[in-house]
Length: 355
Image 1 (cartoon, rainbow, N blue to C red):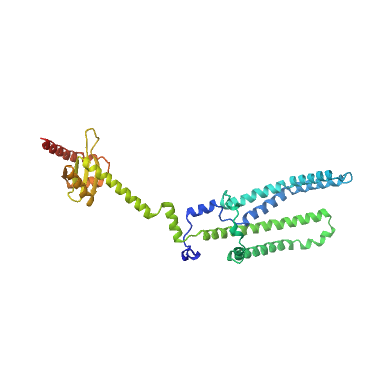
Image 2 (image 1 turned 135 degrees about the horizontal axis):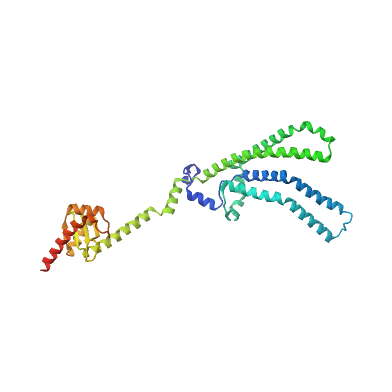
């Protein structure tokens, strides 16, 4: 349908749509952010703990070479040796792996907070369609990702070359250095390349996150029809709600009319308004049991006449009662005197009728 085309998605996403997407794990997420965090965390571990890691590796290698002559080759001994090497390697790499995991999680949390969902783990066989997969390869988004990757490689390559260019005049002198000196030179150069690369990648990650945020907002945009459908879903169909209100009003009107025959008096305007009051001994004040204007007022007067309920014309009092009271309310205190005079008049009429 034309209304569902991307060109018609002009409305900002509603809070419900964003919340539903977030619950499914569909959030604005830049892959560069956690990658930069992991890289920076790894460099930090190597900078502060590289000496300890190198010392541990030297110890493992030293032990292996010292025991090489006395090692008897057998399946059991080889299994034990390999197991010891794996344990030592794991202990050495624990700081690096732990920091990489923590900063990788932090890189995602900074972007969109904590989101726990299993929807992304559920297999989606629609994504396995080779035709749609080929279509995605030649989409605009794939082109943008390709351009971003090329730019990133060029920038990183340029940074690495610029840093290494400063060391070019020192490379011929490496021939006079020991193995340790050569390794130290390589380590310094690699560390500087990594630092400058991290700085550049961090800036690129911020830009990529801003672009990803914008792209996610564009993807979440809705058509006017989608917004209307969502409002209907949340608030209910206006037609159904109107029908419900109509039925409720009709039922309230029916209950109101059923109370008119038991009223004490009906005060009129005389033709436009009608308010039915009930008062019995022991009540705090007279109560409004029915009121209406126009056709409803006429219906109240007709019911009052059919059931011998006294009708009294009092235009000012009728207007005030109609505006200031609702069904079931006591009359306002400032109207006690006026209503009391009418009730006294009604009681006198009833007394004369009985006499």
